[in-house]
Image (cartoon, rainbow, N blue to C red):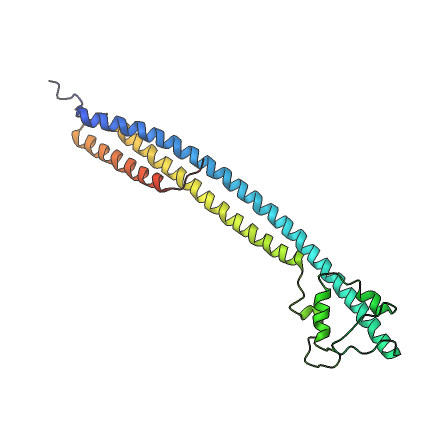
Length: 227
């Protein structure tokens, strides 16, 4: 017997390492597939976030324009109403204002935006002409709500949620890449185990192969999956 001959692995251990190598190869392919899928979902989520932010900016611009329209309309109406009160053609509102279509103030009042008119009505009901505790303008009333402003806020929330989802997808992709590296180590340990010159090295490398493979397999089984 040649003392320099490399010790052979027991048959059962050689078979176990072969199975580990086969499963590790399959696991590596699976991890690569999952990583690519999660990377694709990450790109989709980032695209959705960008689209939502663009739409949010547009809605915010619309809200600013609507607010400016309301401000100009209110300023024109209150100016015309004051002139008519001074001229005696329109009575001073005391909580029961009724627009006079024959006067400029009535003409302007009837052309308030539908979103703005409820706030003006609620403001007039507080008797601002005689009540010093009334809000200064309808813009301070809870009835003053802009649909475009609410839409902008909703879109911002949607964009933030999509961005958070993209970051989660990116982390999932990274986790699968890391598991692929661990499985590659299991393949390396299993492949080298049968080529070492000492029995101790064979057992150590075999143990390392089993440990890294089992650890990676357990983690992969717990990771979220997509198809």
